[in-house]
Image (cartoon, rainbow over all chains, first blue to last red; front, side, top):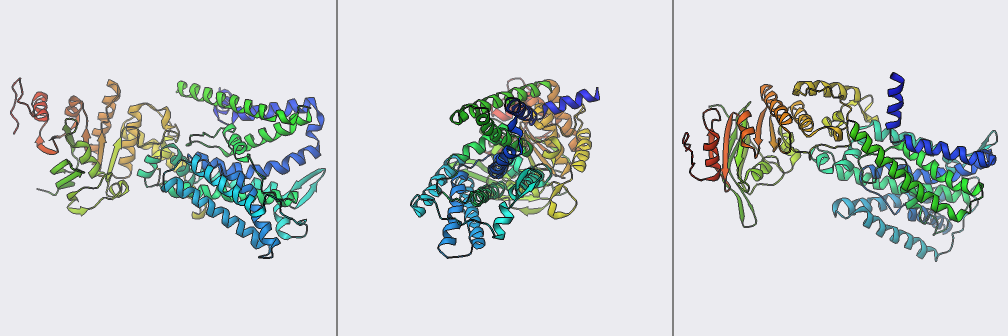
Length: 328
Length: 257
């Protein structure tokens, strides 16, 4: 009896569906091609997964508060360009360029948040506009050419962000630990802290939250800033790891990140969010991209699978929701 | 006579050229349930919005226990002990009962910088409050508001007002869209709140619900208070209806004013 109710409670969790899908995915890919679980493949997949994942974690909180941010992909491209340009031009050392890029990102997030909360413009329009402004700036400043990046070896900043080492046969980047730390901290904030209660209330019923004295606007602005800074950090990490700073990089990432978040079980309409779900969602999409190539499906077909997963997951969530409501 | 809990004097409110309130005097005593009646457009909602800080008044004074107050926002009114419960709008459906009860005032556990909610304490208090307000079913405090019935939601909102020592709980149409049993539940929550020392303003279209629960009836018509001391125990429903519409009553009964 006790066991059964435990199982039922597990199934009722929004993370359960995505988790099953992730397990199925891994089993299917592995049974078709055993190389899928080879240390080399796991190491390669993880390296980029955690970079996109950093953005998805911040986006989870933002979407729980009822907003989303389409400008993250452009910040992913713009921030490393800014950092390298400042460094290459001799304006400042790399570390100062890094801090400057994050501060600029925070200001961009502040502007996004200000437009959304004070001017009451939907975040879709505000961040779409910001996407074009930021991407346009990156392209204009660089004339559309990739920036010169020096091989980052030797810089302590690069070591901290993406220094790599081997654990047995696995090549691990430091960014993995940044991702894990961010997931733990943001998961804690969302579910255990007062701020998390305010974030959920801001997305669920902003009027009610305001009436209880919750500073809804401040919560949302803070989350827009977090989202921008995480996107900048992810872009810089990626740029140092690949020794490239292309003003076009990150194009389309905003939609992939939002897909990761909603597949994990966070509501697009706000009020409900799960960091664990997002981590699962991140893995589902990145493993899918990696796996279909490994089993011989043309990489160009990737989007078909992603689209099908999104549709399937949304159908599952809506079905679970209705069943759950009917049961009580 | 003792100073009332709430005293509103000569309240005027105009929206552009429309006079919604034309010099209203209104008061609520300690531990009293006041029924506020009036037809659509009589000014009930505007009066309540002024009292709950949702709209600014054009002129007039509000006193809480004899002290003059000014409400710029609903938070000001809540801080002064005036809690308004609108159906549905005051709760976050995705959050649990306990999280709603403490929204904005969550207790903290452990070091301050961790900002950690004391969820055990919240659940414990919520459980006790639900029993105090008189909810009959055994509902765990971790239940999301979304899976509660309309009457149970009212109970949660009333419980919250009671816990945070709101002196005055304003209930705007609390029995709308509720079934018979649910309505009786809400009326008993209101009585329990009064019996534990809270005052209430009870607004409802259904005059029979008002008669069942209030100590005194105030009637508004066209932005003015036309009767403010009707005793529901000695007055007929028909007589009150006559005051509301301003028409002479057809079926006799005790004359009012």
